[in-house]
Amino acid sequence: MTMPALPNAELAVMELLWRKDRLTGRQIIDRLYADAPKPQHGTVQRLLQRLAAKGFVVRDRSLGISVFSPAISRDAYASAQLESLANRLTQGSLVPMITRLVADNKLSQDEIENLHRILDEEI
Image 1 (cartoon, rainbow, N blue to C red):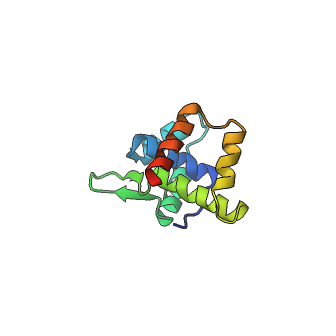
Image 2 (tube, rainbow, N blue to C red):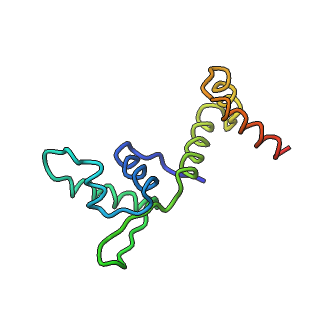
């Protein structure tokens, strides 16, 4: 699945939505810009509009106020970005990336055991 990489500001909004599932624009502003010296309503509205245009969020207006929720899961986004990275760096193979993570001790023992379980199920 081709999915664009998100800029940091859009990814911050998505992180909130993945954690909370449904938020109003005001809730997003309050969580992302609580200490901002000036209102960030316009900024958040533009971020939400861009995310909706890209198919990342859906807007529910049935309650009289717009409530936003993720249209794709964090796992789907992460998988697409990993696939894109593999295509750019290793001609589409994830094996060199996984091998590097294991060799550099970047995976916990639980993560390695999970990989073993997944591989055993697939074989």
